[in-house]
Image 1: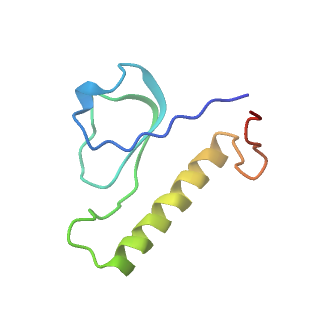
Image 2: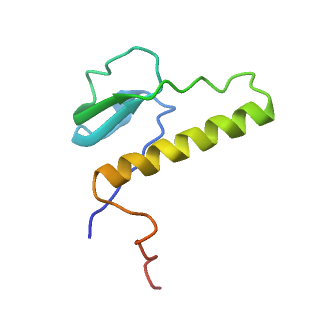
Length: 87
């Protein structure tokens, strides 16, 4: 089974594990984030949430969700086919 790690960075990049990620997606700030090694890099052009009205924030949240799901599918991971681990 493939393992997926999704990281939303709101802390210094230096605090993240120094590994090569399958995908690094930036939100559109134009930075290449050279500290983050990645097989694939994408700029998703996501607006910053600061001072957004609730409806705008929900649209941004939904946009991020759709982009994450599409990225997972490109890596062969279908969330609809994934089962939760049994306890």
